[in-house]
Image (cartoon, rainbow, N blue to C red; front, side):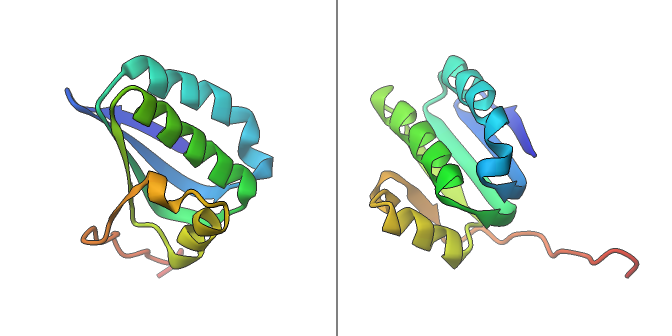
Length: 112
C-alpha cells in the first residue's frame, strides 16, 4: 500500500507491505500523481516495507529520476539495509539522500 501526503514543498510517500512485482499495477498511477504534484522534495518513508525486489527498486529509481529532472531531490527514510542493498546492486543508491536520523515507530504485534 502506498499513501501520498503533501505539504507546500514536500511530497511524502508512506509505503507499507511488499514493494515488488505483485504490486506493480499501482506504480504508474502513483508515479503520475507524484510527478503532477511538482514538489521540490520527495520523501519516501520505507518504515512499513516488508520486502522489496528489483521491480520495487525500479519504481523508486523512476521516482528519483523524475524528481531530479525537475530539480528536486528524493529522500529515503526508514529504509532497511536489505533495501539499500537492492538499490546499491542496481547502481542507483547515489540517486537518493538517506535519512539516517529517522526513527521508525515500533511495530506492535497483533494480539500483543
